[in-house]
Length: 251
Ligand code: PGA
Image (cartoon, rainbow, N blue to C red):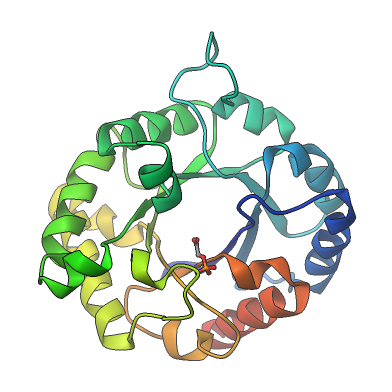
């Protein structure tokens, strides 16, 4: 069984006053080696101070996107190495809000993920279908296309995947256990076909309206190796409740 990863995605939320939440989360984590890994992907402006305050605790820090190039004339962008230097161990790549709002294609996502790995970060690569795609029965085809295009040049062990149906993100409409089980099994099969047995060790997170009330139903689903949590990661109590639910299932 893969060690679970409970990852918060703060999106464009978080000022220095919110460092208090980070301290509360860090203080509330379990310390055993069997406990889930806990991660917060915070805005880049908070990263260095958040990492400083979380140092010596089990809480890891991550960025939310990075540019595919190491450096250069890319106004407003941030490189993987910059995130790494600021204290990140992870970075989200290809979140649907980046794919749709910033035109990030599978090829761009793959290039960002490779840049992350080269900088010593673990990319969390997101895939997921729209509501129209689900309703028209295209879900698995869409996921397969995103996986085929977003993993170019990556080796198992260097990245994490997140399945986030777009219609479940920020809507309160969490996917059903059967829907999650089907897509996660499909992703696992894809990984095993591509990487052989090492495909089993790639962690696959579920994301989309995960909260303390539904976590106990989601984490035991086969091939669910943790969660990517937006809204509920902004409150220490909610994030820790989700983390503890995952931890209780691990032991
Ligand atoms: P949500 O966001 O938990 O608020 O639905 C998840 C995500 O976008 O990663």
